Amino acid sequence: MRQSVLASVLPGASVRLNLIAAHQPYSGAEGARTPDLLGAIQALSQLSYSPVGRGNLIPPPYRLNPNTLRQAPRTRKSGAACARSMPGDSPAPSMMSRVPLHSHRRAEQTMAMPAVAHYWTPEEVRALPDDGQRYEVVAGELLVTPAPKLPHQEAVGQLFRVLAAYLDGARVGHVMVSPADLTPEPGALVQPDLFVVPLVLGRRPRDWTDIGQLLLAVEILSPATARADRTVKRRLYQRAGVAEYWIVDLEARLVERWRPSDERPEVLTEELSWHPDLATTSLVLPLPAFFRDVFDEI
Image (cartoon, rainbow, N blue to C red; front, side, top):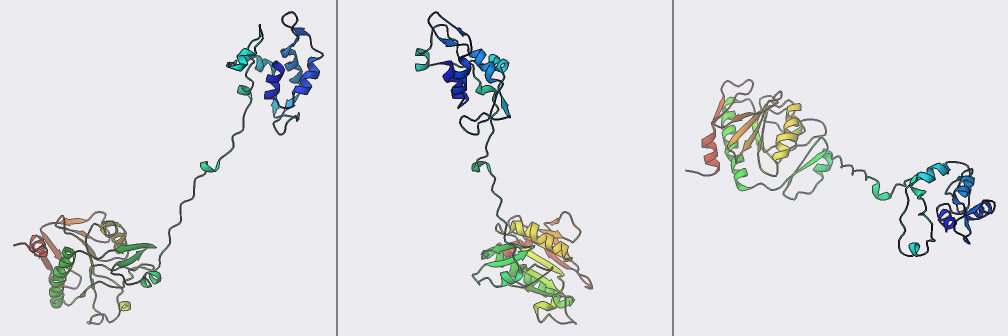
């Protein structure tokens, strides 16, 4: 019985255990031929075992220590094993609790590498189909804006009329609306809702390539564009040195004004004034009246 327990732990050791047990003293109840297990273990401790193959007794890493085995916790017997126990037998020591086991990595434990996002270029964006959405790219990130709602378009129209009337008298720039093809920095292509460009030799620009700098960029905020307008595009306009960038929040009825060095916007709720370089007068826009006109309120 004890030989089978040891053999189950050390495959291939039962033959050698039989040989060693033949030279060991016997003990136990009268008529019982039970080998002295401790003596056999002490003999086996002079050998080293490695679980490379069944019956292989080879040099370290594993060497059995009889003192360790004597102190190992006992295992419980149950069922048929208890029925076969002989009188006077004590439970076999648990040797596996002292044998170091090597863990093997499983495929499920391996983290997958995140997919690398595509780096968009202005050329790729220009090649996209005209499907009614606005496509822009900033630092490789594609920005897609769905067709705007009516209040958005009404705000664009109202603000365009105000800016056009002012610039006709000031003669320092020209206001335009998107669709557009602006490249404030290499690798970028943006289409602000409204923007003001400088005059070229006193005249309006004839081509997109004539526009090297923006005097003003304006975005009408919507839920679909809030993140891009307030972070991605705002940083772009600041890097590009756009003198002023306005974010018109229709829901909150306010305007956020950003300048290149600003860390926080100037929040305007009552009056918006603008005085571009070389202008002799300022544009003054009462905001409550402007928002009433946008929403057609009396």
